[in-house]
Length: 117
Image (cartoon, rainbow, N blue to C red; front, top):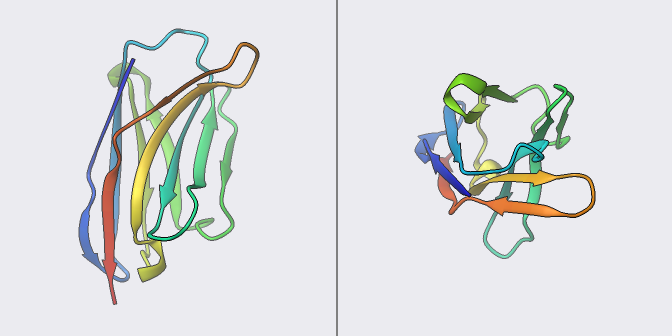
């Protein structure tokens, strides 16, 4: 299985970025795709995820600003980030996992997002 993120970079506060996660080689039983982030000195946290049925979850800190969506034809998961804030600065990781037993979990290598004030 392979998850490859792209789209990170340096951007000014108030700007927008779209992260992409190209997914390949995973089993059809994987039913949750999401984005996590880890800032320096902090634990990795969930940003947003999407279940195969379409349900989504967002961290309170990004609700109304970030949107997770998929392009099934391209096997790609996106995170549209608007109204970025300096506190959004982190390494963003793509994740794919099975929410049922037995567990199966995959991570991308991460992409850096830096928001300047």
